[in-house]
Length: 186
Image (tube, rainbow, N blue to C red; front, side, top):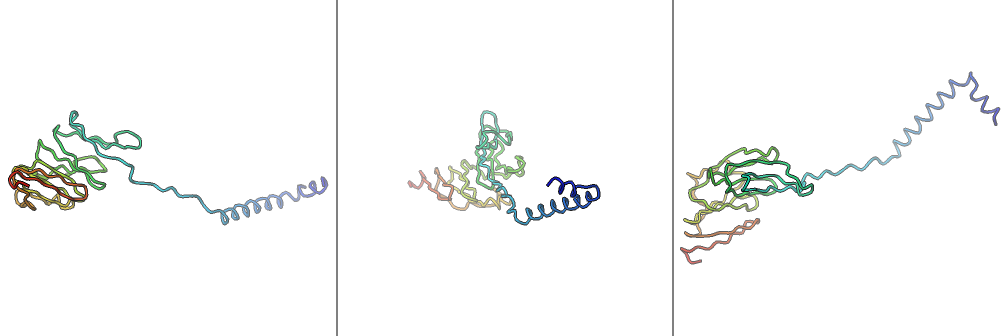
């Protein structure tokens, strides 16, 4: 056997051995590439479980990542009395100091638009993809799609409906509205 190996690895046969070795490695690589099933692609989940929160004492809102327990974004406001409205696609701050609805960009955390509130509005609610505004003194209620919020003009657009003066309303996230009115006794 030793004689056979010496004969194969003799100086005149080295070039042949090198080519056979390279060819064998190439055949193995091609075979593995054909037979391999690949790798499992990672499924990236874009919904990271973040939620926007407000802090009246610091006059700020922030995007809190509930999985890693940290704030990703912080936006300071000019009021301690604010209402935060949010769904999976939109974030709004009802700013009582400026009497506006501030549209906040989810990606940059900056205010991108300010929409003036109607006169006497005391309540704001998020109902799916709609914002519901309520003026309790008059009972006027405005229902505004979030997609049309930038076109909303409080001075021109009349209330969607009226629930009666001296009223209180409650709105679910699905859009169900319950109202009581001292004027109407309901």
